[in-house]
Length: 407
Image 1 (cartoon, rainbow, N blue to C red):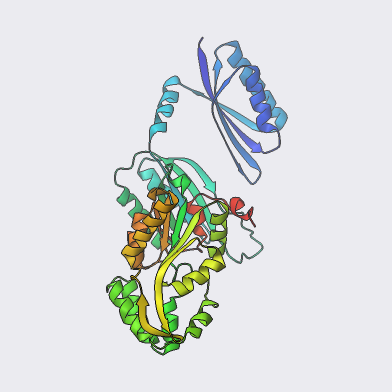
Image 2: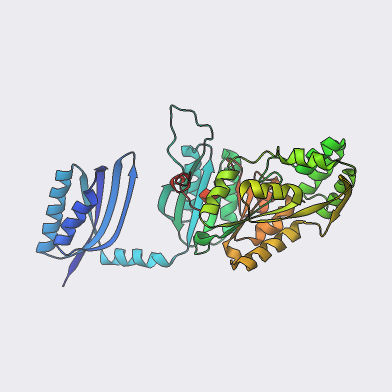
């Protein structure tokens, strides 16, 4: 029996029962739905239904009844005949690689979206869908913490991925927006472990610099810290040098610093959400366990690996206990936790800001440079510099309604 294929496009004001009414008409004529998709912006509906119908009386009748039903519902209906060859070509595209591009910023402007989608178009890639991940922004009320994110699902073959991401990095730099590019595979949809650097990531300070200020050696330690974070000197050497400068500092000072740690914007929202959805979390830090364990209790973190200060008679000796937790050690701990939890390394995320975070950022399934140094941003898979730490949730594909539902 000969058949015909049509694409039905519906537009107009959304209302309850609309999709049910239209598919009810198709059901009366035994039409086969080949694809269906719907979007709703400001209560205005855009609905597409691709269907196959028997040629002859049935096809003529179903088109007439659909037009009548659309008139009854106060919406516009448009029909496009699709040839069998065009349909089969479309079917064969489904085997192509899929990717996710996430755009993040305090607010998103047309120029930012235009530049990103132009790069996608120049690579002959198709955008299958565009989804807003953040809640609606008021134009009257000033937002205390403005943030905006959209997710583009794209499809096609990419020859040189590095060239593709370099263009996104340039747009990010020029237009103050974050652009993350990920393969849309099973691992991306099933992340299970998130590991964080502590200083300048989970907290908005470098603890060792604060301790140095209180010990009266602030400038000397800050200079060593900055040089290490930029990757100019070896982390182990910098750590030993800084530790010696802290000799004689009172343990009471550690407590005072811990209770006043400035937790990064969005960190609580992120970790509360991750915990609610069954993720494991870890602090992997070149800082100190004293502060890592404080944050563990404060935020509900599962694992803490950091450096242990040696304290005798209530003061720091200027030495440490155990191995130094440097960049390689962080990556080693990430792998160790993943094995212990039975999690594939591709299901892991690492977040950090300094050069000593790069080994774990590059090992993880998704490495995110957070408000990071240029060297780190240029070598990480993704970066977040425009909003808080909860931006990680948008890279995972969560919508605000999935997050705020837990409040």
